[in-house]
Length: 352
Image 1: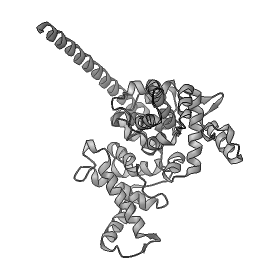
Image 2: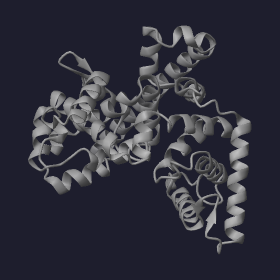
Image 3: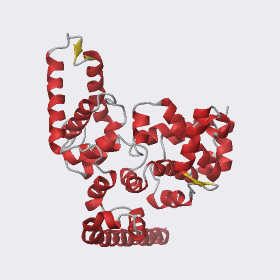
Image 4: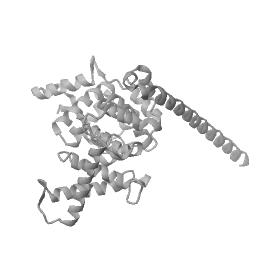
């Protein structure tokens, strides 16, 4: 027994040593990459961002110290939002919160019913308490609670046509963890203005259907066996993809892994969100092939917590985002054209 215990102790010691060695190696790699990003890439952003060297370095994950800056530059600011503009919309949000608490008897404020606005504000309050609950930093009394509340409130005033939609709090929270408040709002508004995010957050069923149809073209191309298995149960992409896309994987994956997905999403755009989805399906393909409809749906809506960056990104790298000779954007355009012309037989997601 003593000998066995000694063996286990030695084995555990070796395991700890190996983990420490890998962690040290990772930290060295991050420190080395950080120097390159700060000294070489960021000062020459426009020239270097699309070079092979930078793209390869980007794929490996951004050092946390430069992550927010790179995300901001990659997302851009097509909306030309300034910190001053953020303050204006934040002031409006605060005025409305105040007026709602003072007068709930009015039927209409600025053309939108008080009931609707109050429901939206209540949803924000409720969602904030559900945002990364294990971190305890966004809940009431936490250091980032008010910042998250401010950004979401200001956004509902900035984009009343979109308003607040469940899931937005996770996106805003990830940005808050990496950027200053005003910069987080600027990135948040611009990110939600991208075609894919706008389609999902406005619940544009027609556009969402086109994204699902395009996704299924690549699903069938890359994972034909699993594709047919899902088809046999009539399991459609909306069952699992909506939640993944809504929160940009920040609710579905461990936070550090979600941030790495965001890194490459900022580099490659919407295509990478769907490539990540296929990477997850590839990673768990053998397990999913053994499951029925209910178990697949349950599994994909609550992924295992032990999912690692190395395994997932290895699976994502194996996914080919090219159908015959067409890339994502070309397939998406074809799907748009097919649906427009009513030729639904060419899009796998639309087959009955």
